[in-house]
Length: 396
Image (cartoon, rainbow, N blue to C red; front, side, top):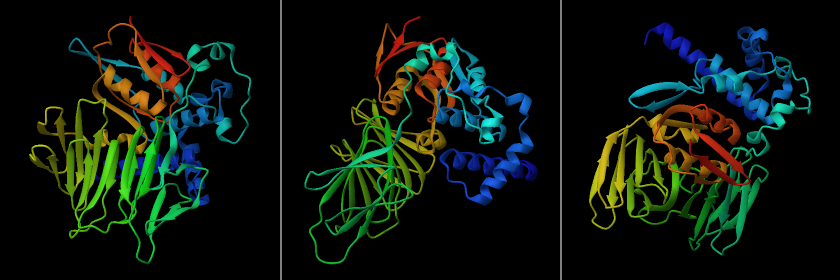
């Protein structure tokens, strides 16, 4: 990549970062001025002007503005590829370009009307729309007490097992060691469907939990090994401590590390446990046979239900896209795609007839509502019906 292209890439990454912070409402005054100056310099009012009642909520309109800005920055390519009969068809680009069309004067802090077009209100996808997942989890203490964790809670939550449990104002739970002789106990953090969460363990290890996942861990790491147990999917940034290895237990697999960044996908409804390494080195161990494999950054191990471990090179950005707020598909079949949708949008998926055999490749923000995501897929010749909390994939 040339020096010019590197500069342009860094430039675009900066404005994409500002767009994400704007969406979350965390821009500093200086960043807001930088962001507004850039936005006004690159957007064409004629190109993007659209009545604000295209969106049925302020949050939905903000998501669409983000898609537009990210596309301008050159980092978001809302195109879905369908692999079918050895040909590749480009689908849904027009749909997400439509999602990107936004009101310039709304961006200038004008209020959006609450009167929506009749055609939009009567659209069944919008009438039955489901919001994307949120930051929420349940903390279960050693005595069985459950504490709901979400963006509305902050401050001191509990004090047990030699640790002070604090909800950070920036989001996430942090375990802070307290002084004195104590009996170490176990805590569990669980994300239901439609939720994700981030926490910091007593040793400083950071953990991101995907939807429908859990992690059980001691309030203090006093043993020779730092052991935790996970289900579902979790991304780890392990605090380095060569004298105290970090071990993750997931079903019939152990991940043995000293300090590294990796992702574990151990959902019960998947056909294998997948461990993807981004940094450092880990050893994957099958607990019954004690057979193990070492993987290096850029590799993914797959432990199937027969106990066999295989290793392959993967695109790590695709694997951890969920942590960064995206669905990233690469030759993904309908059933796999639907399992991800079910977890994130908290819907039950059923099929009318056999699922299509098409494979999908593309990137879609996890901030889209379910109807917006489904609209992408309807342009890939897949039809859906939303009824309450049930999503039906219809046969063609």
